[in-house]
Length: 284
Image (tube, rainbow, N blue to C red):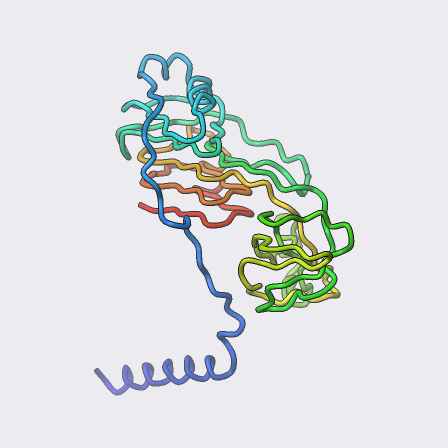
């Protein structure tokens, strides 16, 4: 190593050490994503033939998904198939192809309509879509980093096992350093999804500590989530047709769901969009 290379490496190590000593790590939340317990092997309970898929397209896939009771996989045939409507996954259902490049779903669908609602269903050609309730419940205390207990407004109606979104307004001094960052899609960027472990009057216990501080002057509150759970998308290629202007895979308000061995090609927005969800795995 040359003197200049040694000098730069030493300087970098000094800067990192100084940043850690100065509390840099205190501003970085711990990250623990992924399906709890790993991705399960889900048996095939419905299989769609090539002729049926070519004739019925999205409707056939949606009907097969609806026929799955409790838990199971819908197996698609090899080949290229043009679909004219998005696919909505259901709890416990896996949509599985014969492999990347072998089963290809080509989506020729119009772009989603922007309705301006703060709570909306997931966009995407293939959609994992739970629900976020519109009601917002103020947090009265406990909203500090490391806390596992929150004091809620009276009459909150929360119960053990509820999945909730903890959030607040953005800090304008940190977030809106440029006018372009004050955008509707970036509202309430400080947030975390947790589960209610216990309820004692106005106090609720959380299953994990809060990763961030929520300032009282930024209106900390929660919104309950009704998640789509234990759904998966596996072993296929998903492609947008010419002019496609949507996300290919949209994951919204979901829990313990996965996208595995899926190739995404040509998108007008995101390839895989994960929003307001918890314990999600995206893997090759």
